Each structure stands twice: as C-alpha cells, then as structure tokens.
Amino acid sequence: MGINPLFQEDFFLTIQDKYHAVETISANPFYIVALQQKVYVHLVPLNSNFTPQQLLSLQIAYQQQGIFLVHLWEDVWASRRNQVLSRIYSFCGLNQSIHGRKTKVDILDVSETRTFLDVNHLQGYIKTKHNYGLFLGAELVAAACFAAPRPMKSKGANYKSAELVRFATKSGFTIVGGLGKLIKAFLEEVPVNDLMTYADRDWSLGKGYDKLGFAAMGQTKPLFFYVDEKSMQRQQPHRLPKKISSAFAEQNVLNLDDFMSQQGSVKAFNTGNLKYLLYTNV
Image (cartoon, one colour):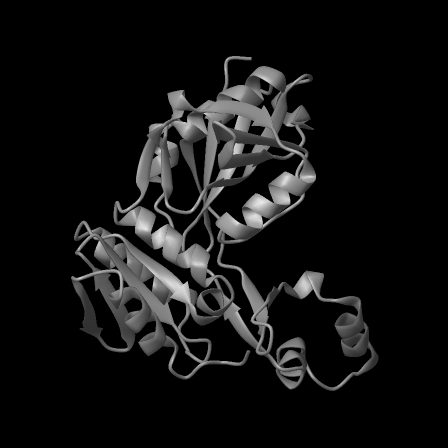
C-alpha cells in the first residue's frame, strides 16, 4: 500500500455514495469536501508542504464562521477508512441514538478492549489499566479506557490524577450520556482528585468534554512523525523500531529526516491536542 495520488478523488467518490449534498470547496492550496454543510473535511496528501500553523489557521478561520473542519491525512484514510467514515457519519448526525440509561456498565478484559478499539477507534488499541464497557443487552456499544492513577505531590501529599486515554462507540451508534456514565463508574471504583484527557485537534473542538464539566487547560504542540509508505503506519521519532534506530545510529552521514526518507517513510504531523481536566469531589 503506497502513497495514492488519487487519494482526494477516492475519498470524494466514497463519501458521495452516502450523501446527496457533497461538494468540494475551492480554497487553493487546500482541498476541502463539504458534507451537508455540517462538517468540512480537509484532505491532506502526504506529499504536501503544509505547516502545522497553516492547518491550525485554516481550522480556526472556519470555526469563526461556525463551521467545523477536520484534517484527514492520506495515511489515516488508507489505514483506518472504516473508522474515518464512522466518525464522519457521527458528526453528520447519521448514527442511531441510544440513551445511556438503557445500557449497563461492565469491566472489559484486554481481549475485549483490543478488539473493540481496533474496530471502532480512529487510533486503535492502546494498553491501559482500567477498561469499562457499555452494554445494550449482550452487545458492547461503547468503551472507555483509563490509565492508572498517578500521585501529584506538587498538588498535595495524597493528590492523585488519572487519564481518560480512549473512548469509542460502536460504529453507527451514538450513546447519549454514555461517556459520562463510564466516567462515573470509573471514579466510583478508582477515586482520584482529577481526570485528565486530550482531544485530537485534527478531529475535535473538545465540545463534548465541555458539556461533561471538563475545564480547558490549553493545548499541546503539533507532533511530527514518519509514515511508512508501504504500511501507512505512523512511527514517532523516539519510538522507531529497534532495527531502524540501530541502523540510523550506525551511520553518521544523514540526519533522521533524510535517513527515514531513504527507508521509505514520509515526514508528516498532526495539529496537537486540546488538554482538558475534570476535578472530582474526592
């Protein structure tokens, strides 16, 4: 699976099968697809020369017009197509809506968590300490994953903080109040003073966290990484496979960007995260 020169056309034709009101917006050098005037999708090829600030400025400009714009990179479309479509359908209000009170909470094991996140979350599975699911009857329809609490001595001798690392709903479903119900279940079992989480700026304005009582605490800087042209998998510079990092260390000619280019990888970036904090009553 290599870089697709027809990536933008592929997305447009795929999404057009689902919508009747799809159009491209002429905003050179940006290629933007508008879906029912509810969400705009900026399609970012891997061979583009954009800077993080350009993409942030573009998103802010649309936000000021009351338009939600997301940045869809070519590698994400190539490797997580079904999850991308699910997220977009959700944005456009095409999901089946279920109220959280009709569901029950249960603890998930690693296998259940991995399977559900790999199918339904845009970034897939990541190992976490506490995993909870929402069940509609016997069907798992949402999952939330939390890191183990950490002591924060700078905030007090017994102060503890935890992180909400993943939240996903089953494709095609919106669970009204679902995340709040899962957070409540976690806090009842694992009391902490605050709960921290991040919202991906490529895909979110963080409004869902605002509604749950989270406080905005700023944003992180854009993150640069390398995308393997064959697998379309992202690799962070400090987490390269040992074989690649060792080969780079052994040579003393190329910088990391040029070396990774020779290895068949393209440098790309995201626009960072929005950071949120929920203070509890502990």
